[in-house]
Image (cartoon, rainbow, N blue to C red; front, side):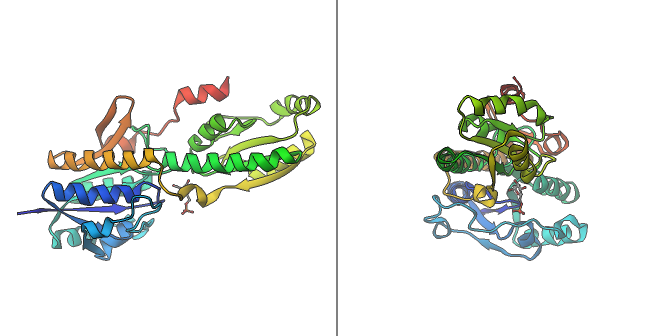
Amino acid sequence: MKKNIAILCSGGDVSGMNPALKQFVEYSLQNNLTPYFVYDGYEGLIDNNIKKASYCDVAGIINRGGTKIGSARSKRFMQAKYRVIAKENLDKLQIIMLIVLGGDGSFKGLHTFYKEHKIRFCGIPSTIDNDISGTEYCLGVDTALNMIKFSIDSIRDTASSFKRAFIIETMGNKCGYLALVSHLTSGSELCLIPEIDYNLNDYEQKFRQEIQNGRRYFIAVVAEGIDQDSQEIAEWFEEKIGIESRVNVLGHLQRGGNPTVKDRLMAYKFITYAIDGLIQNRNESVICYTENGFNYKTIDTVVNTPYQLDSELIKFISS
Ligand code: F6P
């Protein structure tokens, strides 16, 4: 008899989820499993919005951002009574394995669900914030970084035509990864992230001197999680450096766009490892990616270890 396996996307969507859904359906069928989609994250588990998936459902989606099956940040799933309903819905369809694509918050919910109901699951780190402990890479990050790169390159065109400072705010929640990597790869003059204390006064003399030496414009990449508002940074440039300033909050465009080759390939590999793991009875794990390749970590370790930004990357802007 075929065994039933389901997948859901939870929290902020990422480009890479659709390629993951495609591989999920194809690899499940190859392994004699019956694939199911849970629509709209944990909300769909509670509302029994769970449907059998076929090749037709995933045709033509590999190049699309977002997720065909929807995502949500479910408040109801935080309550035990709704997790009981979610388990009953899985049982009704005889779904014995669950794959969850999500970030830190989604994994915390999954951990609780597991402790209460002993479900067999595998988590795939999927967040543009890249802030999940134990993995160096989360699905969607490369596409987000490329969207930011494209935006900064475009802003540079107009910045270099005017004498202006541009404050470009990236997403990332409380993590500075997107801002830091974008700073290093776009050659910006200033990078402010929550992980590093800063004092704008330290830059004043240097920036004023640079203008005297002929600099026409500045690009500052700031993470949304820093204490200061981007508008305040712009005002600092106007008042202390004496240059007209503009703020660009990149916002949700960082979450969209067609998935890069790297994210399509990572989606393929994450799903393959997830299904292989479940078949081999690794039932409470998160697939992590490090320099040694893919490995399985228990969800307990992943959610209970605080995330730390790569110290080597931090060195580049501290020096
Ligand atoms: O977790 C991904 C993320 O895009 C964060 O970077 C950001 O802070 C948040 O989601 C935005 O959430 P929402 O889409 O609910 O506004």
